[in-house]
Image: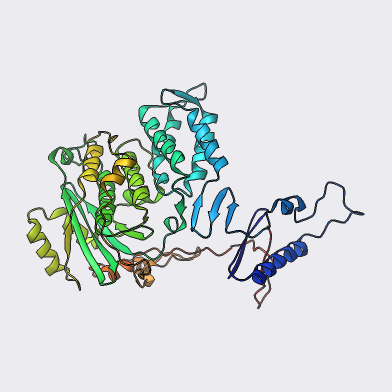
Length: 464
């Protein structure tokens, strides 16, 4: 296998094969470079023009094949299949964080931009770190006339999380499989109401699909805080409750299976919770920010890849029942699901673990969960079940035309976009029809490289 990509002036190549294969790939790369940029002519060019391929960098070993290489500021290891920050970047990050001590109350906007830029560049390869930006972005709202920001206690708590990350990056490199979503090994839905939350999930195991469901009723003091027409002065939105359900949903799944490096695909009928989870941040310092922080801690410990999609509320019937049928006991509730939504294997009722549940309720009650840290999560929440051998196939779920993304010139028509109300998902394969496919986007106009009418122009390696 041979692959090459070009990022500005960096040629990134990947080769699997013999020494001859690697030599041929290198010669092809240099040949294409010379065919795009003419070699230096001492008679015509000034002394400032250099060769297209930097001789200085070649002597340093940049063009040497290796299983461990620094590419675009990241240290890639093709043997261990990991990605990590080089030591000099970790030291620079720690130095920047050290300048902002826990007692610091104000900082210049310029230095704050510098810090966030460094953190944003790091978060690409650090699972779970995306959920730690809500109060850091919110701090820009406190800018004063002298271009300085105020740092409150919540900002420092989130900065402490980044300090912990910077101290453990060398010991805990990121597995590449933790960053790239694949076909899901777990697919399910969640929902929350004014009374409680619940969800369903289908786990792919060597013995077939294993359906599980969960639910939890909110305490009275949480129910009384929900904003409704009858309670306009409440402090919790339905989006906050829906987001809490997504966090608990992930925890229930990790109690049932070893989800490391597997994709968990979840559907929600609340767009706010869906996009909060996708972005990893919210434009608020309320419960949503703290819930995303808890989600970040949880994901980093259990190393799964979360993916979130929208499912219309009228079709989210299974999770609606899980969050609303509180007149049924657990036994009656399980019997109801086995008769209403029968599966090849019987439904299994599971519960959210007490540490996560306590943290979620504390956040919804506007209390901090400082005692639930990285170390405590790892110590308390590691008793997961078996997920089968690592060679087990992921869910082989077929997408239907209902989930296809239209072209940019596509005009939405009611018959083409209307949701079939009768096709309520009742199993994993029904849910798969609503998955959003993700793929590499084709290059758009202006085209890169030559274009030929009637033929496909072959440009194996180009530079932009």
